[in-house]
Amino acid sequence: MTSSDYRTLTHGPVGPGSHDDGPRVALHSPEFAADPHRAYREMRSRYGSLAPVELAPGVPATLVIGYSTALRVLNDPERFPADPRVWQKDVPAGCPVLPMLEWRPMASRCSGQEFLRYRQAITASIDQVDMYAIHTVVENLAAPLINSFCADGRAELIEQYVFPLSFQVINYLLGSPPEIGGQVAAGIAAMLEGIDAEAGSRMLGEALMNLVLLKRENPAADITSVLLRHPAELSDEEVSHHVSQVFGTGIEFELNLIVNTLLLILTDDRFGGSVLGGNLTSRDALDEVLFNDPPLANLLVTYPRMPILLDDVWLPAHQPVVISMAACNNDPAIRSSELTGNRAHLAWGLGPHACPAQSLAYMIAEGAIDQLLDALPEMRADFPGGEPAWRPGPFHRSLAALPVVFPPGAPLAAYDESFGRPAVGF
Image 1 (cartoon, rainbow, N blue to C red):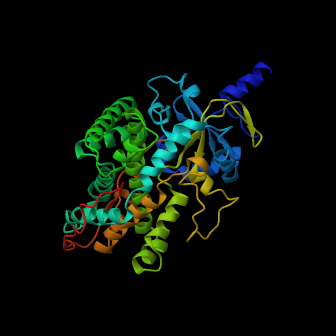
Image 2: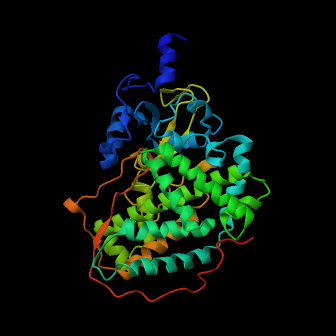
C-alpha cells in the first residue's frame, strides 16, 4: 500500500467526482440547517450515494444519501458495527459531537453479545407499556396546556404545548420526578446542538443516576423499574444509559416529530384542509414528515472495522458512516410521488438497531396533534418574516419556534379518567 493509498483510507471517502482533501459539507452550519434538502441534492449530484461531510469543525465523516446503500450498511452489522470506541480515542475531549456519539453501555452503541443483552432489556421494558394508559395520559396532559393559551388567540407551540407535553409524557413513562426530567432535557438539548455539550453530558449523567438510584430504592410501574428488574441484570450505570436513550428519543425525537408534523399541516394545503376536513389523518401527515423531515435527519452511525470499498468509494476504517434518513428517503431512485399510506422510510432505522418504540411514538404524536387540532381548528402559522427558522445541528431537524394565531376559544372540559393508571405492568 502506498502512502497515498493510506491517506485515502484514513482521511475520507474518495470516488468519482470527489477528492479526499477537498471541502466537506458542514452539517453543523446554519446554512445547512436552513435548507438541508438543497444540500442533499447538491451532494447527490456531485458525489453520488456517499458524500464527505463534517459533523463538527475538524470531525470528518461519510454521509450515506443513497437508499439502497443505506440498506446495505444497516443490514451488515459485522462490517459496519455501531461501536465507536476506536474512533473516539483520537477525538479531543471538547469535541461538540463527542457526547452524542461516544460509546455508552447501551444497545445503540454496541455489537455482538453486548448488543443482544441490552436490546432484550430495552425492548422488554417498552413492550410492557400500557398503550391505553398512554392514550389517556396524553389527553389529560394536553387539555390544561391548551387551556393555558386558547383564549389568547396566539401561542408559541413548542414552548407552550409540545415541549411540556413531551416532557411530561416521558417523565410519566420513566417514573421521573419533574426536577430530574428538567436536568435531563437540558443536558440532551446541549448535546444535540453541540453547544456546551460536555457540560450537558455531565448534567445528563448526574440526573440519570439520581433517577436510577431513586427507582432502585422505590420501584414502581415504569420503564426505569422494569429495566432494573430485567433478567439481564443491568448495573445502575447500564440502566442510566438506557434511560438516557429513552429520554433523548422521547423528548427530542417526539417533540420534533410533533412540531414538524404540525408545521406541515398548518402550511401545506394538501394536509391542512384534508386533515382538518377528515380526508386524511394525522397519521398520514406524520408519515409524510417521517419521509421528508424526520426528527433525526442524520444518525444511525456506524464505524467500519477496516477500509471498505462501497459504491466505488473507499470508506476509512473507524471513521463515522452516518445514515441520512432524510436524504435516503428522498433518493430519486426509490422516491414515489404518492406517500399516503407509504411507510417505507428509514426514520425508524432498519435492521438490528431499528427503533423498538415505533407504535408508542405514533400514539403520543397522534394524540398530541389531534387534541390540538380539535380544540383550535382554525389555527395558522405566524412566522416573523413568513419563513420558519431551524435550529442548527448535524443530527436533528428541529424548528426553533412554531408561532401560531387562531380565533380565541373556550377552555376544554377537564378530563382525568384513569389518569393515575400505571404506565407499564409487571
